Amino acid sequence: MAKETCEILVADSHPLCREGLTTLFSRNLGRSDLVEAWDFPSVIATIAARRSIGLVTIDLGLPGMHKREGLRDLRVKYPEVRIVVVTASRDREIVLDALGAGVHGYIPKDYSVHEMAEALSKVLAGQIYVPPFLSDLNVRKANVAEEEGGAHQTALTGRQFEVLHLLAAGRSNKEIARLLCIAEGTVKVHIAAAFRMLGVHNRVSAVAVMQARAFNGSPDQKYLPGLIEESRGKPMLQRNFSGLSQIYYRR
View 1 (cartoon, rainbow, N blue to C red):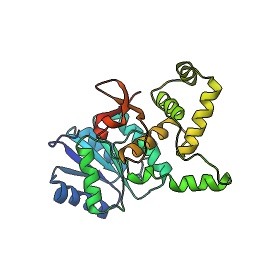
View 2 (cartoon, helix red, strand yellow; view 1 turned 90 degrees about the vertical axis):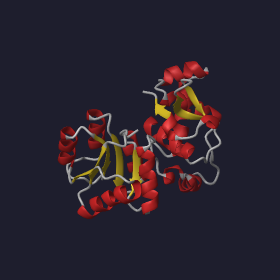
View 3 (cartoon, rainbow, N blue to C red; view 1 turned 30 degrees about the horizontal axis):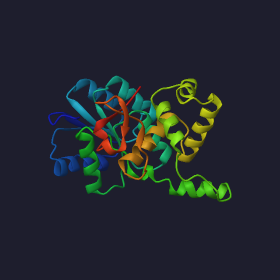
View 4 (cartoon, rainbow, N blue to C red; view 1 turned 60 degrees about the vertical axis):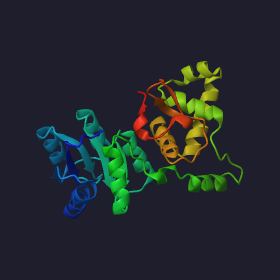
């Protein structure tokens, strides 16, 4: 959670965008402890010089950042600082890349003032903000149906959920096969099918999508793959899930 006494760094190369965000923090969230940066080197220099910074909003187009690499660099160097991407793109792969880099939120710039303030308040409260549109698989499912001539799977199977959960928990294909008493080749088939259904290409992206779907309450799964309940050390049951502040990724 970003402490109320921490400073907030607003990083954007466009002065108007910086002014808009600082105004939003001030008027809508009651925060006046604000600092600005206009490129990635100035972000690094500012965080290094002001250790009171607890939250950074950053545009993916920031000069010198190199997108995912820059985000990962920030998370590694300053793990105590919460990072929120505030950018123009709604591209699904870009969102997944940012979440996979470990940011605490992804907010499109075309959000209304109310939506953006609500998203930022969630991150300030210690939650991870995942944009709702990330969980919308309807268009992807329709495309799959067209490509395959109509017949297609519309939901992950129970076995695919089990495989995804174990995969997200860091288990190898061989370990998953042993735990589920199935062949390693079968595990690979389940993984390929699940990734295809979710429209992703790796385990980090799969967990991000499942997290988004859980947050928006759309699926009917019994537990949430890859999300671990801290008090029990076991997969998060859907009935116990009440917010992203309760969960963490198992490394």
